[in-house]
Image 1 (cartoon, one colour):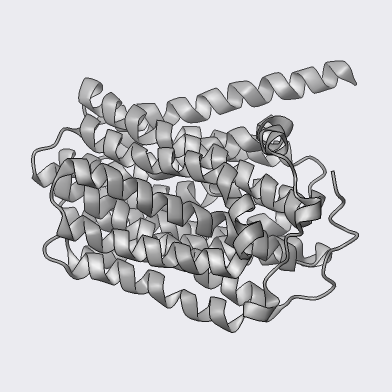
Image 2 (spheres, rainbow, N blue to C red):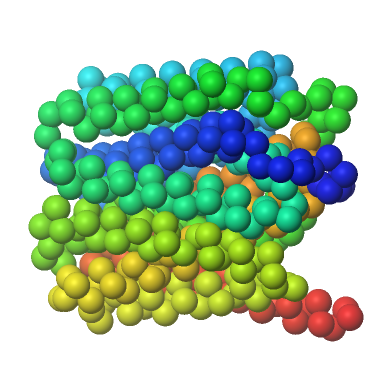
Length: 394
């Protein structure tokens, strides 16, 4: 592996950081608005929770397809050019969801939209990691994760304000994505280079997927919980008796918890000796919060408070893993590792909606909480095995 320290920047580049943050903020808002919006529309049309989950899972399929391809595409076209093309594609797909009513068309639009969004995800992460000085990496990546979380919080809030009727939410999502192109254009000369000479092979991509299984499994669980939870929470909320707007505001509570906790989590990750212990703690909190949902389902304010803490801590699975990658790699190696990281996140996006939707069809509303808990329990089992094996090897 390439050491990140040898080519790391010595100061924060505000242009580079601004472009990456603008891109990921737009992605967060568009996803935070779009995931519940599309689910509510399909529910209103009488589509089953399983089919809603299957349609949402196409986001994961698109991301799985995109992840190995993003780095080679960006090496040929350049980071900024690839990001701008992705913005155009995602904005047009967002409008397409309003133009086309057929469910088959929505499966195709999911592929286009989430391929483009995955590209923005990977390249913005590469850009922010390349721009982060080693001694302030936790701060910069915590700030990046905060804006991502702020986008996810703002999206459901916008949904609660504009509703699911008419073209406004679709054009709003497209406009927010298009606006992210301006900071990218302003930072054109500050984009990170990816030399063809240092590019990893296709095998290198898969090597990064399995290189640190505790970290990649953490982001897989986060992807499953985030995608499935955001997409199906409005359906869950409606089935336990909350109005559409109140369910959307509960999603906002999760996002606000993410906003307030990501910078402290990023700074903390720079101070701990073994990040796996942090990941275990976050997963334990995720498990406890998930299993506790049925117990507080009748009290909106209690649920909002629990989800505020739960969502913020669970998002630490993503922040800590991303900081770990940025501390060890640079250049195209870092881009390939970010792509592998997002690949695992996307695989979680594929699993989460389908598992959670099917669980709700089989077990009723409580299946939502039980399926979330299953993901955290499986991750804890993996981590305990890894830590135990490490102690025996030592």
